Image (cartoon, rainbow, N blue to C red; front, side, top):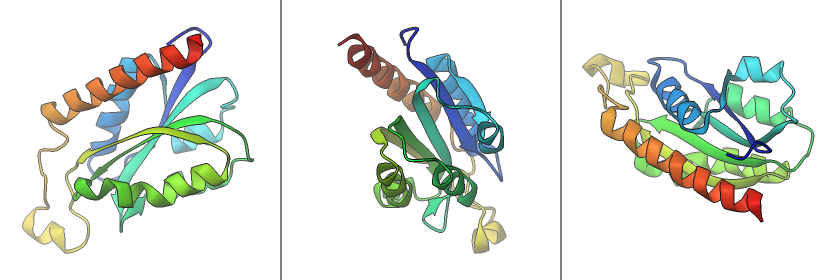
Length: 161
């Protein structure tokens, strides 16, 4: 990133640390500040040129804390990417739609999205040990790194024009 584009990765990770692993990977690739939703709520985000927002998916949507955090923003243009971990990550376009819509209503530009499988033990899945027990795995985290590298390269070209 250029010196004028600071990045913050804002996340919530509740059960198994799935989303925290993604958030840490993104923060490492971007050289970004890593903030939980609670920490971000007490921080001025005015100096950030790009925000990464993510959580696990619960009942088809991002965690309520993340959605509430975005809802609390005054309308202002921001560049954002969305990420998530989910038992059924192939549905991410549908699962991200609620947060994406809320961000657009707030005047944000959603520049990209990322999702991967995460260990899911919500509801009756806990009876059988859940699904995707070893996810995100090394392959998932490598995909996250490649995603961040592409997004970082795109951000360079946006900032330099």
